[in-house]
Amino acid sequence: MESAKSNNAKAKVSGPEKSQLVLHWSLTIVLGLVFAAELVLPQRWPLLDAALIVLAAIVSVTALNRQMPLQNVLLAATITAVLGGVAHGLSSDLRLGLAMPFGPLYFREASGAKIFGFVPWTIPLLWVAALFSARGTARVIVRPWRKLKSYGYWIIGLTAVLIVAFDFALEPFAVRANAFWSWQTTKFAFTWYDASPLNFLGWGVVALLILAFATPTLIKKQPGSRSAVDLNPLCLWLGGMTLFALGAAKASLWPAVGADAVMAIIVLVFAIRGARW
Image (cartoon, rainbow, N blue to C red; front, side, top):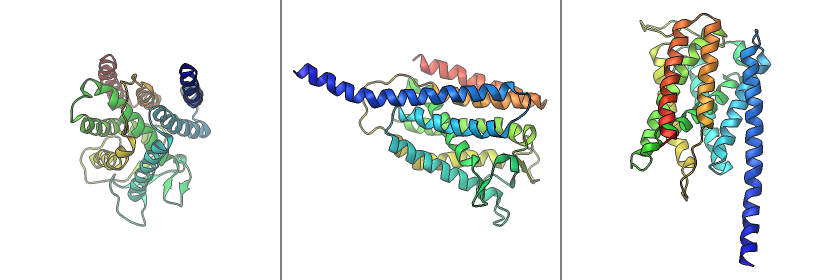
């Protein structure tokens, strides 16, 4: 009798979990098809660009939902989208004249329609996909040290580093290859495809700010047994780097291609080491 009750309880639990898996992998397959289309088609299709960023953000959420309650994940996604979007809006809004925290930025029509005339709708979703994939990748890399008391701080710090690396690959792709946005001249002597060091510092600082608010919602209150390695965020992060590198290659931006390849290889090597631990 007790065995029957136990089996019924497992069946009740497994139903929603199976639904989550079906939804997640269905969306992941569609994302893969859109990603492949982006690589194969000779011309850029705005509809594919929009679908790619929407699917990347949703898959980031569904991947994390396999480990955390949906309400927690959605709260973290909302925090990420709002803070990331507002930060970019403040830099690009000429009416405010702040140009902070990223520097003087101008969004072109290709980046999408603006929310309340403030920031393109793609930017908040970009932040969700970038931050969630970077955080998940950091968890894989730091896996060997998960028992340390400072483990959480290492996750936060490495996530910020991976976010900056992500943007380092994104800028040539967005500015030169696809004209999603452009940068105004600054006093900095060194720029990376028109993006000043202030931009990359801003991405790191904003990522840390987002994590300060979002991390408490992503901590398991009742940790169970050791969970399996989740490579979904790593695949998303590397997929973004691959897309940016190939886009830069089409535009003959070879220094950007080389930098993207080096960063991707370094992250992949450390992630493989962490996953096998």
